[in-house]
Length: 261
Ligand code: FE2
Image 1 (cartoon, rainbow, N blue to C red):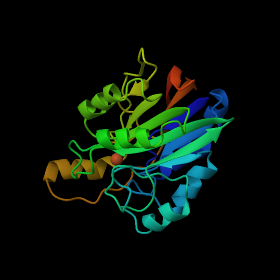
Image 2 (cartoon, rainbow, N blue to C red; image 1 turned 60 degrees about the horizontal axis):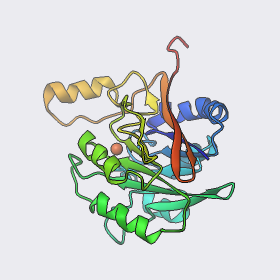
Image 3 (tube, helix red, strand yellow; image 1 turned 90 degrees about the vertical axis):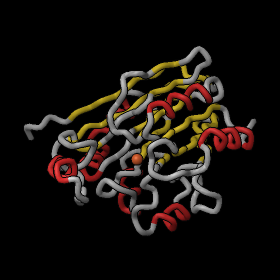
Image 4 (cartoon, protein in one colour; image 1 turned 135 degrees about the vertical axis):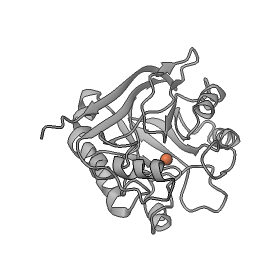
């Protein structure tokens, strides 16, 4: 089974990147299932019904979220309506939606889990490590492979999760920081990992945000309304082959649109 995971789709340039670049990637990498983190899809923060549908139309089977899950009005209803939309599993009990699901491709059951980090995130969901233990225990024997999107700020927390889940899952991919890290690996136990897959969004930006607004905040130390940047896109992803629950091959993808258009 080949999984294509696309990092944080940011605003209109991110959605355009999916529209223009994802079909080609699916075909080149012969992807069986596409997972897309869509937590910045709507103007850089959160997701709406329209932006969710746009991501699905571009080829995504499963859409994951993160710290901006509930930033747009209507996300609770959207989570209730869309069974393939995941929010982090370690939100408090009683939160709308689901944090994991199983997608079956050619008879192989892939458990996809979305988790949120606690370090430097500004709020404190339940422990992602113990949440993962509970999910693996609950789902034991009901899946053939496990894929984790760990949406977190701190490199240390993400690397710790990779070690915590070593040999127990096929892949742990980090999201949220929007800069692709050069540390793709497959452990001896068959767990693929990367600290951050990056961002699918505007190239000319401060991690997705319009540089003017981001700079103004740094220079004035005052609240400044952030807008998504515009212009040429980049598409960041990883393609991971999984056999018998273990990662057997992994590739990073960083596509950029030329700016002279
Ligand atoms: Fe995030």
